[in-house]
Image 1 (cartoon, helix red, strand yellow):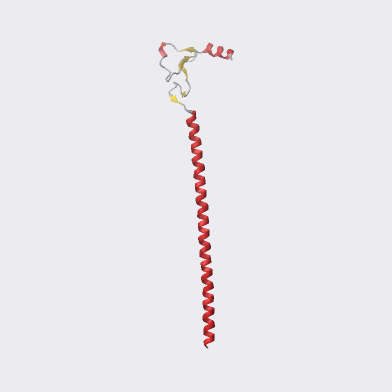
Image 2: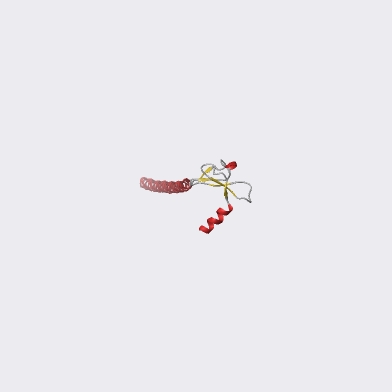
Length: 122
């Protein structure tokens, strides 16, 4: 690790007075002699070429978990609604069929009774 730091410090140099305010939000400015423009080493929660962007990983993770929770809740709600609709439609269809069967039985009984009375009167 020390050897790696020595190599890095050998290649990079702190920025001079000319680039003193190049890095934003507490970033540390440095230059590499073979590259003409300066670079920034950003402090925690900042990113970008000049440390100009706020980076909050916990917010990003929380947003994804909130989105997943909302999706799961919506799926459960939609599933419950579909099951309820199927149950309601099947139950109403069954009641209507039962009423039709009852109506047919009454017609048969009424016709049988009418036929029985008309035969008895003749």
